[in-house]
Image (cartoon, rainbow, N blue to C red; front, side, top):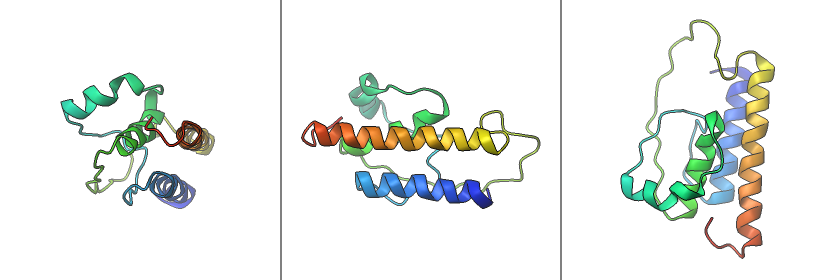
Length: 118
């Protein structure tokens, strides 16, 4: 991942880190996650987002409910063809904007609920 997409990933990752006191994550949109059944059972009724934008919500719900979030680095190979999700620049841009909206709206929600957990 290079250029503007890499910069966007850094911005979205830092937003989660700063607003939710999370770890330094590098890829908020990565689609591979591992979650224990215990944690899933605790947060499963709180999910509101689907698709690729589900990833930031999952991270935020885990963090706001006191669970540890860890990233295992993945080496990306050169993509063959075009992404079905982000495709050309505007597809990725739209996904990034939705992620930012999710991150900010969840933060506002927790603030308005007197910092109660989501």
